[in-house]
Image: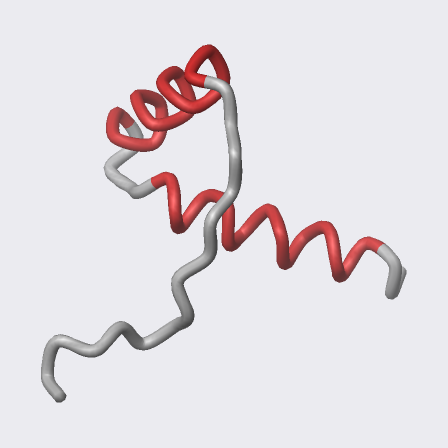
Length: 50
């Protein structure tokens, strides 16, 4: 299936006053909010390993 997602779809509830500015900032930086969230989650998990 060529259109199958490579990672599972997740759902989070985030207020618009947090989501919209974050999405705009990510776009201005040439990235996606998904990429930002994934990196922050990796940083959060690795923080316990330090």
